[in-house]
Length: 66
Image (cartoon, rainbow, N blue to C red; front, side):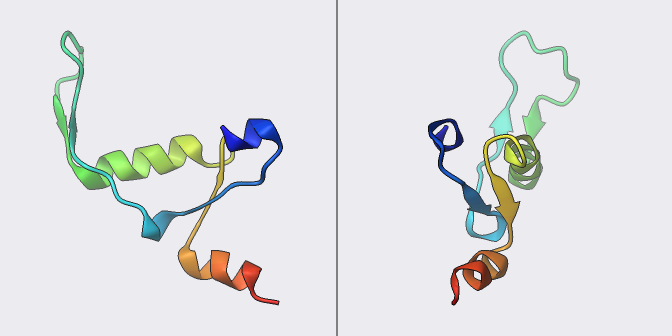
């Protein structure tokens, strides 16, 4: 929620990781288990342009280099 406090947030997508997850009890989804890559991609998509700007690490570093 740093963006809500006025900070600009960049999230390097290739420097983060996620674990596999299962759905909550009572879920109507037919697939109760999600592999780590799927959870990672969905999580990045949810965060991008809402709470952070998702970029590759090289792009973040290039932006920081004078």
